Length: 358
View 1 (cartoon, rainbow, N blue to C red):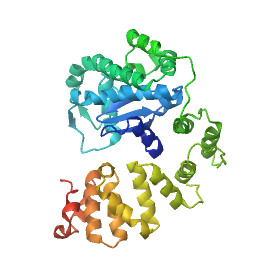
View 2: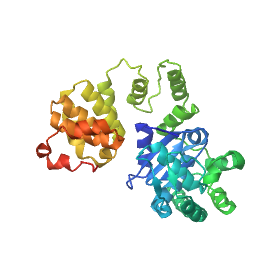
View 3: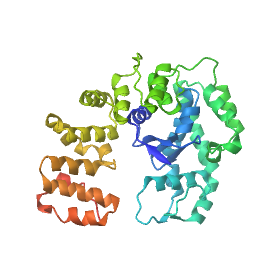
View 4: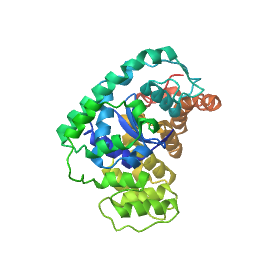
């Protein structure tokens, strides 16, 4: 299961919560419709995005998963990973999460992980209780935000149980479905431009045809000129850039996105662009964001700063950050090289606070 880093989609989900809480939402590539929580993060499969009928349905599912976080369900399961063979692969973590959430230890466990099977079995009985609590939270949010449940009901009722992993992890309950039906309205949900953008990217079935045509064209190596102005031009230019097809001034594209999107992965990409193109007038942005907590959680945080200080000819600090980065990858030869080639006495207290243990 592949995580897709998409700053525009991640920022959209982050804003749904009104920035309430220390968690993120991600899209993962998978041909089965599902949504699930691992620790404090929410994951949506590409197939779920494709099949969801309208924005209120996606928001409702989002709030259900957020309920699992608010009630701390993942921590309640107390998963014990006995042997990860020093692997920090997020794919491995996803597989563990699917196994626990579904209550089926056989789902998705990779050979590099040894799971406490008895613990998973002992805890699976809590699944229905957790789902009811998450549903209660979702329903409270539906009422609070006056969401239309028509699309959610259609999603639930149109997918056959025996072909859908969603019902393996989210058991049907007729009482809860009846509550949702009472909250349904006949009128059509007006989707936001951002939701339509995400639907077009992952489903090619947005309500905005220009968005669909743009992404269909990109897959064929064609840049279609869209007249749609409901999203910033930087949205289009970013996707073109990611496909390696851009001939524009990407500095302006990144500056516009950076001004409206606080996503930490976008910052990683932007800072990498600044370093590669030696845009010294923007180095201050890189320095300023070093203390950003969300940035520090990014996998490439240490790599970017190692690269940045190498570009600034501060090899001591560069080696310090590369040392930390390669600790996260368990590449012993590079750990030995970089960790033995910087002077600890010349590392500031701030930088040293980011040091990882062995």
